[in-house]
Image (cartoon, rainbow, N blue to C red; front, side, top):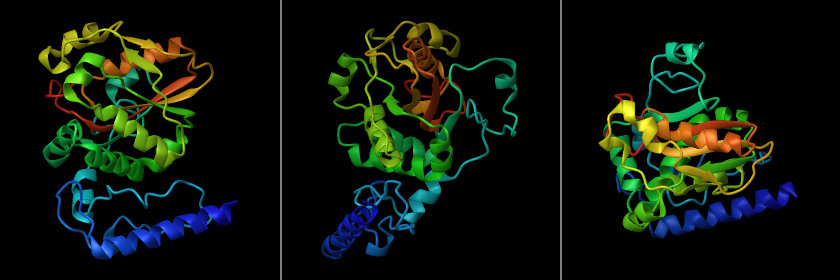
Length: 268
């Protein structure tokens, strides 16, 4: 019942405020203490059934939120900067393997540093914070995608064992929770590939071609594919094609950052 959810949410909120008075929360980005009133407490309609950001230990401070979320207008299909409502010239010339894309901001400055921290084994709180900001900035767009499930871009088991964590998994889990959707590891990277940033742009599509497989059928489902960074889009395209072959009705993309200068130091 709706009133039970509201009561539970408010109880958790007040309990969290009590803890904050004793142990002031810290922004996971700048690591500075935040006032208890700034702990991500957003005005909301009590009858609103959408998941609440309260209770997550990764609410960023207002300064970091403004800095990490500041961005330019982007193409709604490939997220290239400076595109108008009709999309960028490249998307008007050719079809993409996904339908639409939502990006928090450009892979530069503080956001680049935060993404790199989210890749580390100790980067859970940073990854949760970045995913939270992504959903806050683009909630209407993401809801409008009409996704049935959230799917992370998978990491090969060997690379994951070396790194100790997968940023895409962490991001997808949080995005799914914020949107009230299941997070499904529907893809596996069955072939270890070279790091994309080690290759020239023109070789990246070949590097990931055939590297992914579907774990299950996805007949008729709309997929929200989540990753940390988009550069050329080669990895996302390879995943989207596999999802479509597994029966997905459509694939949309959500990433934290886009490397606007192709060839950046990302995995994509």
